[in-house]
Length: 49
Image 1: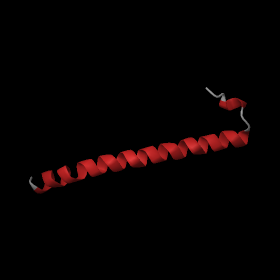
Image 2 (image 1 turned 135 degrees about the vertical axis):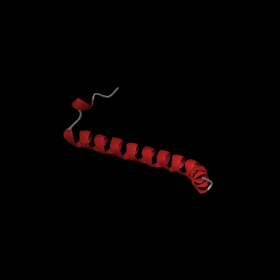
Image 3 (image 1 turned 45 degrees about the horizontal axis):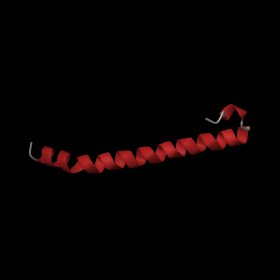
Image 4 (image 1 turned 90 degrees about the vertical axis):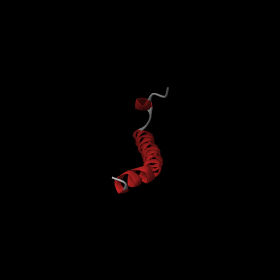
């Protein structure tokens, strides 16, 4: 594992921004998949209630 504390502050900032962007992409794709999987059944359940 890379010791981030030994890197320069600029590289630490780039690593942090990269980690945040990666997390945002994963969450965007994950929530999109969940949303598209659950939207149709949820709308059907509401309309048939």
